[in-house]
Image (cartoon, rainbow, N blue to C red; front, top):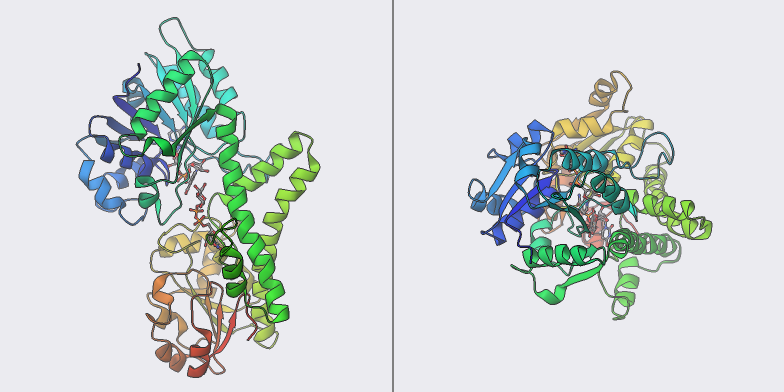
Length: 467
Ligand code: NAD
Ligand code: UGA
């Protein structure tokens, strides 16, 4: 029976960092080393200001850093010491070449796998933690097996991560399920059991699902696609609600009360963001195309198309409500992160909306409680175009409070559902007093009490409502 004593995690990002910090926290008998090729990121993990914001993360890291949790740039050393290695590197959408704009770029997974094959001096369990297309483990296995010797054997597992940002620590401490896929061979099953033993330090055994490798890989893409599909479904309904007088919150509630549907993930919004939903669905679309299943590919692609439509529809509504022009008008954008309780901005709907506002020559003032000023400028600049950051700085003001952003604004647009933007937390009387009149408010997250704000004088539009 294999007992894991030493874990290495390659990739100290949003997944590798929190996931392996929680493993260290819950398994004091295991040494966990998280490595990355980015020295800045590792330095931040070793500092007082962690590189990512996640509620509860700091406490977990501080409890075990320097005891059984280490962050290092010594990738080779950590690989050599480990008996189990998580590969938790980024798998972004390919920007060029075959499958550009759709397929996952597996260059980082491959390079991490090759590194393991090159430097390992003993047998390893290699765990695919990154989200990858179905059958990626086969390529990893081929690379590893080409470097196996009678003394060094590699087993490969798939253990996709289901945490959501903003609730990562809660999700990791109490997951709905942990999924571990393995080749159904004697050593594959032994490796699978070894990883089961790591998780059952704190996760009840009945929540640990064991499957074959390919089911595990595909389940991750499937889960993200189905979650995103629910949002696109409710967002599609929000357009019908606005045209008919139905209320999307009431419709979602009525549908969600059916226990077969369930209440979660039915919140209409300005569109889903985040580093994974779009990437993983496009990945599934590409996989379906490659498998010569065009109807399947089109079916999933529509989830992304609907998401783009929702963002554009929201912008169109703002422009038409503001008398068909926003040129030189000041738009206060509340929230820049792709969801509350994270500083992550990857694929945030805010980026698309603000770029559209800038195209229309509006003046934009942004406030987000967690996103750094430099990150906002970087996200709004066009990659590869010289001096666009300076252009952005001319048109965009970054503010340190919602009040500052709304001062002199023609419209306030709620893009991220931070609790502090709720009408019981933010002083909307004060916001209203500082704005140009008529003062418009667009709620892209259904977090304010529209009738109450109308009484204050605001002209309020809410996604999926037409009151
Ligand atoms: P990330 O970009 O935050 O982190 C990846 C890290 O890997 C980077 O710091 C990078 O420098 C490092 N890296 C890349 N190649 C390396 C190499 N060869 N050696 C050492 N380090 C290397 O990415 P992330 O958000 O943590 O996502 C990682 C994977 O997990 C992706 O496949 C993603 O789809 C999946 N995932 C992400 C989330 C999420 O909430 N962000 C949730 C579930 C699954
Ligand atoms: C999502 C999944 O929820 C995780 O299970 C998965 O592990 C992860 O992707 C991943 O693979 O990266 P995440 O993107 O961090 O997690 O956050 P979500 O809570 O899923 O939100 C994604 C986007 O959908 C956000 O922009 C959010 O505001 C939006 N959303 C979510 C809605 O618009 N409506 C909803 O009802 C729920």
